[in-house]
Length: 205
Image (cartoon, rainbow, N blue to C red; front, side, top):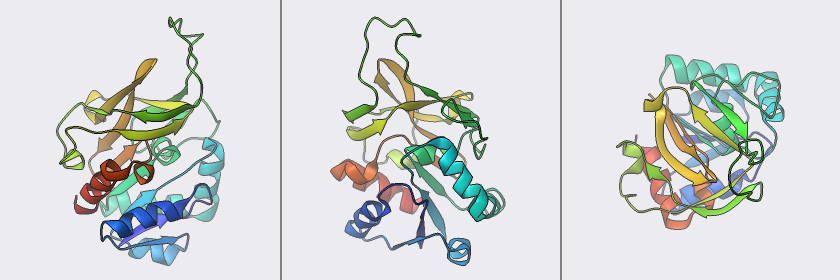
């Protein structure tokens, strides 16, 4: 059973609906007993980094997930803000992230980067995720288009932990993995058949 962590941030029901379409059972919950009994997790999120971390810390969910993911090696998929929460931190906030991926999130700031163009922020729309390495998560997705909505992007410190890159003025990690810990910057639940395939792959890792 996949448990979709109810972070109180974002439309978790759309993720459950997509999983239902591909025949994967899931439950939305913030109950610690339900979370502890899951075989794998989806950590979604829309909003600010500190708000997300504050909820995970105060609810006890962060500590419980750490035990189940780091000790028992249950798979987890972070989506959008959920992916950023897997990292060590973000320019958006002051709190430490979960720290399971050696990476940080940075704000799209095209002026300070001296890029020849200035693009709207947030990055909103369809984009391609170019595979950096082969992985079960990408089975059947040699061609893909995913839907993005984000103002912050992730840069990994360990090159091998970047599964794919996308470009929006600059190149950023659009999916990451370390062992049983996965993250995607895009929204598979809004990405039609491509998102369905990716979620199916995650349910089988």
